Length: 449
Image (tube, rainbow, N blue to C red; front, top):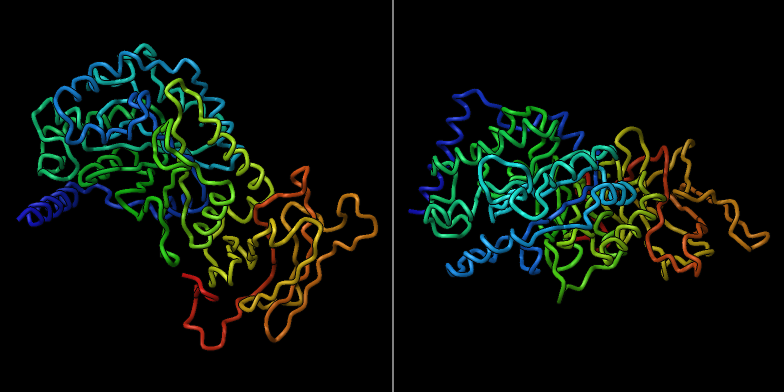
């Protein structure tokens, strides 16, 4: 019965939008623009970061006394005095992030902008300023596309209207079946999409019926990600997905600031995730959870700077690229340039391909031509520092078993020469060479999932 009710809600919303003539999809050219971006920064931040709790969800199922403290006490002490949005934006730009998605309102209902719809907002804290506007202004200055996360569900609204606090467990949790909630959400969306300039990306974390259509009505060029395309969290599809998609990952174990029990991923893990996502044609939305005082955690800043160095060298293989016919051979992943016949082979280095050493590769799914040219991104392949007379040139040969490339890993990025992260071969004017018995395009070989 419950599933039937939800189906009726969805169908009713869809028919209503059609009758009103509202846009009900992203514009194709805007989706292509989104796919070009490749890498973005997710920011989960709200006033409950002060106690290191999971963002918003601690309210679900909580007792009334807990909810009273959460709603009435936490805003009184939220004052991020060390907040510097320009520093955040510059760090994102250095890391190669082309867009940002900021939590304007998470499920708790606490608004991080100057809203007239509720007192449960950043304006009623000791900070008392429109923190979202400061963030958007800073990221725009760095040329970074602007995205907003928004939850149509609102625990504060539920609390005030005696609706059980939870997610998608009651028809009243769905704006399409709760006219009061829909009106409340639309009033907030009107503020977000008329008072803050152009918004490029909209991430709807909850029931999207009626919400995304209203967003497109207010800003027709907006790209709706969650609510319109696949946006898996902490996981990847096994194979490339047709069309745009986006995978969202934390650096540690939680989205919001978690001061304890929160081991972080290594830079190599994050970079390898970025590579795999782009090889499969998706976008990578990597999260930071700022501290309640407004600083980015030192662990997360350090990881972003490691990614920044890698992207400074290898970014050409990440941006304006698409999935190649073969996603990988063994542990080497491929991307392709959006235009032309250029393929990028992203190769594990570190102990597998040490600094100053030569290595040979046979690419069984690549076929060279008379015009094939191979280079290493960021490295001229002429000299290896302090090694007189060493031949660092790249050699290539087109053979019946595939394209053979011999190259030296000679770009010195760390003092101790122990740079652990992948190296990229740029292979221009190359063709796809199907394997004998291959099932066709975009196949994975050598144990790929």
